[in-house]
Length: 332
Image (cartoon, rainbow, N blue to C red; front, side, top):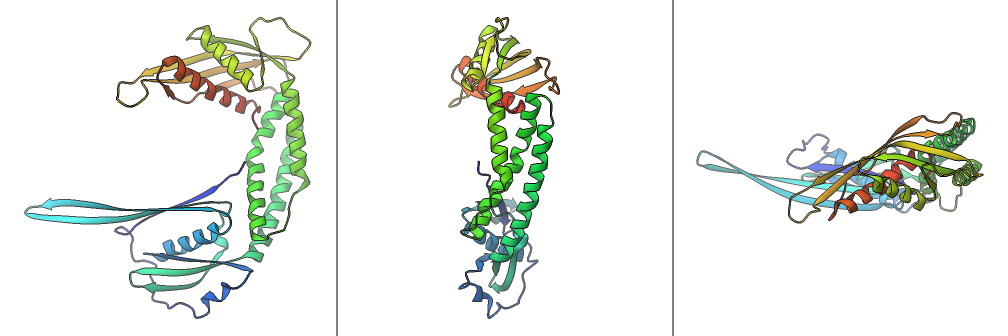
């Protein structure tokens, strides 16, 4: 799963001070880096030095596989004071870059000059230096992930292990993002620490063990049995072996999900929108005698809209199931 890193830069020309505008001329050799394969160069322009630097850095980031989106707008305002009409104009711009490069401190400004009311900046990223820094960072992150994986294995219960492993996913995704950035900085360089494959094997083994468990669903629903049956059905769609409450036990290991399932339905009276909205909530306790098992918790379904109350609640229950499975470490 790719994790994109977004810069959101908001500039308002009417509000921006002239701080940072210098009168220094552009360096004569500022563009010497353009022809070098060891450097990435970005040029940015803005009403302040800082905004120009950020735009130059955003241009560099876009060269590393990012997606750049810029939007500008003009907002006119007017007010009357006595017999006089005072008009103001605000100019704004929103720049968003989605990229794995999120280290602006690695970008060096090599030239800055004023062009009328604007500042122009030339910034450079040393690819080799950045790659060295990133390799050191990746080595440190890999060691941290290995330590976390060892701690996850020390949990006695299956669900406790799954929950601990789930918490490591964010660090795993950060490493994958940094790996993509390293490949962009240093094409042809592969970096794949053994801990990543080790985590994949551990995750697959835990998921197989979780699938071998049957769940007895014992939920009291304020909306009646239909809501509880809907919840059990959504669990089955996600791969859970869901049994009705009181079903005879078989040879497989069993966990019991006991709790209360609530739904709040709202009726809206406005044209053009959904007339019904539903939000679901589950207070649960997992029973089964497993060591180190979390006693219980609360899962929430998103507020979902539809043309019928039952459809709105069905959508919210789907979100509720995803939240619950996330909490027990089921989702990857």
